Image 1 (tube, rainbow, N blue to C red):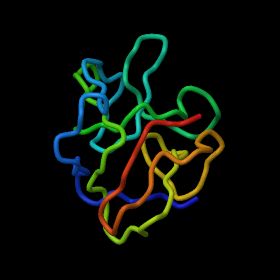
Image 2: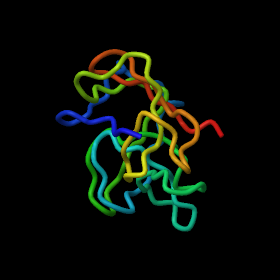
Image 3: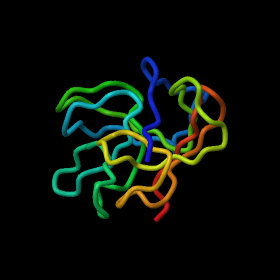
Length: 132
């Protein structure tokens, strides 16, 4: 699996995402960077980076961080939206949870077996929640 490389700081490119496409009011359980794939940790309701090293809750995606957040800061997650993410991306390619926390890859991982998005064009991706 090859990593899908972020260029600069990813940013939301969907104009005015609707309320059902975001989760807000939760706190970061670790330092998050804009564009990180995230899940909600059941033990304390904190937002954590998704990681596909094993099947389980941590490999699921509930949304993508719109901004950088330090531990304990409020986080808004978005899903079913577009992000400006990189350069030279391959349009139409599926995106999966990577074995590197918060990142995306171009192939399924042990835990990230279902696609969580696809590449729209050379710079944008469309992402959604895990569907399994």
